Image 1 (cartoon, rainbow, N blue to C red):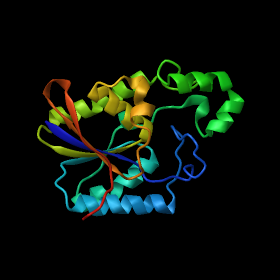
Image 2: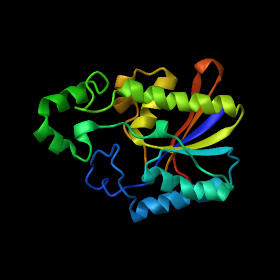
Image 3: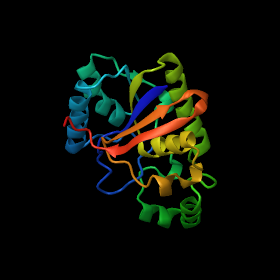
Image 4: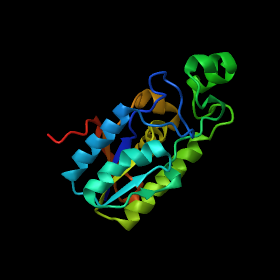
Amino acid sequence: MTDFILVRHGETAWHAENRYAGRTDVPLTERGHQQAAALGAWAAGQRLDAVLCSPLSRARLTARPAAAALGLAPRVDERLVEVDFGRGDGLTRAEMAEAFPDALAAFLDDPVAHHLPGGEDPVAAAGRAVGCLEEVARDLPGGRVLVVAHSTLVRLVLCDLLGIPLARYRQVFPALENGALTELRLLPGGRASLLRLNAPATTD
């Protein structure tokens, strides 16, 4: 088995306005940098075998203090990039309702069957990320790995590995906090156990 600590990157400049941040490389806020530092302080007291992150700067910068504390080089993997929200990228829910109301309504009803216009198929997104974790698990059996990625992608991964329909990711996992720890144990045969969800990265 291999344990993965899945972390949503630190707060970005779009969080205050609740804008959908997909592939746009949105910078961290000062609070986001503080969350990255807290993750680094937490990691310093852990046994971790690898640090993986999305290629987007908000994930790389969040992972950097943890990797430095462990004396590891963070491994950037393109498969951990956030879901592409297409025309929804950079927009608020209200702005989407103005731009494409019918498509937004369909997305809110079933975000997998009706993903945002021009966006990525969530099934494909889950597949690439799960493939990444399974590959790491084969390379590091019995290991413990920190993965810094993105909210929608992590929620899709959780649903995929826990046998929850992907279309329910927004209901079952309504929110992942920035910088919080979600620990998943990947077991032989594709089985998985959720060990903790949205736990603060504290050194207590």
